[in-house]
Length: 258
Length: 258
Image (cartoon, rainbow over all chains, first blue to last red; front, top):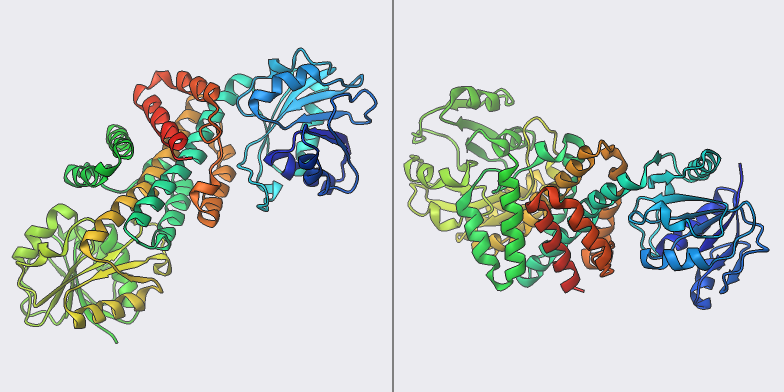
C-alpha cells in the first residue's frame, strides 16, 4: 500500500524521513516550513515535492500529514493547518499526547513516533528505527502500521500515557548515557589523555549491558561498595561541584540498588 | 619474547587473563588464591599451572608476577608475597598507585592495567583491551610493553597520577552509562513496556557519540532547553526521589554545558 504523504517540518526527523518515504515507494507531495531555505534542504533530497511556506493544504493530494516539528510548535501548527477532507494528521513526538491534535481540521489523528536519535547529515538506516504508533481510529491505525512497516521491521502500538514513560526511559538510555560519555571525554581532555583509550571499554560495556541486562553487567567501585575509591574520585572531581555531585548521586543509586 | 608468568588472584581479570596469556605463547607457572576451589576454576582453563594457596614463590620459575586482586587486597598481598630474585611484580588496578608495591620483595615493580569491563563466563577478545602500563624501570617497562603487545594491539604508558583521572573517566563512561541503561530498563518494566524497543536507540546513540563526539551527538529535551518536558518528566519520576534528582541534575548539567 503506497501513500501520498505531506511533511510539515524541516528538522532532523523530517530530513531523514522524507527520502526514506520515497525510497519505500510513497510520494511526498509537499514539504512545509516557515523558512524556504530549510524547506529546500529537505525537498532537494526528494524527486518530487512542493516546497511550501503556507499552511493551506486544502488542495493537497496527500492523505497522511506528518507534523515533524518541535514539541512546542505542534499545537499551533495543528490548529492552523488547513487539511483536505478525509486526511490523517500525525505527529512524531515522544512526549506530546494525541489529544493535542484534536482541534485540527484533520478527519483522523494519530501518532507516528520514530524512537531514534536523529542528526542531520548522519546516515541512518530506518531498519533500526522502531515506530511507536497510536490512533483511536482502527482504520487510521492500520494505515499508520502499513506506513511504518514499509520503513522498518519494528512497529509498536503504544498509548499516549505509556509513551511518556517510554520517553523518560529513552532520555536515560540515550541522552543521559551520552552525557556520561561527554563527562568522560572532558575528564580525559583535562589531563591531556587520549579518549581513544576508553572506546573499547565503552563498546564492550554497552554490548554486555544489552546482552546480560544492565543489573548483571554492572562493575566498578560503586557496585563493589568500594568506599575508599568512591571518596578519592569524589575529591578528584572537586574542581566541578555539579559533576562531583553527579558522581556521588549515581554511585549512591548504584549502591542502593544491589 | 615469551614470559613465565604467575597470577595472583582468581577474580574476573585473572579468569580472563590466564588463558589469554597461554594463547599468546607465555607460560602461566602458578595461580594463587586463598580459596583452592576458585584457584582451580582458573587453573582448569590452563594447560599447565600449579594451583597455589600459599604466598611463598621463592622457588617459582616465573619472572612476572601479576597481582589481579581487589584494590583493597593489593597492599597486604604485595607485602606478604615472597618473590625470587629479579622478579617483576605488577598490579592490574586502575585506581591504586604504583608506590603501594614499593614494600614488596620484588626487584622491579609496575602496573599492568587492562582497561576493560570483565565478567566471568562472558567471552572477551583481548584485541579490545587497551593495556595501561607504568614502571620507573626502563627494562621492566619494555617487558610489560612486550607482554601487553602479545595480548592486544593497544598499549599506553600512563603515570599513576593520570591513571586516577582515567579511572574516574572510565567510571562515567562504563559504570554510569550502564546505570543509565539500568534506570531505563526499570522505567520500562514498571509500565510493562518492552525494553527491546529502546535497543536500536541505545546502539545508535553510542555509535554516534563515539563517531561525532558526545557534545555534537547530544539530542533530547535538556539540550533543547525544553523546560516543559523536563518538568513533566521530573514529575513523572516522583515515585523515586533519588532517580528524580538524578534526572534533574544531569539535565541541568546538559543545559549548563551548551
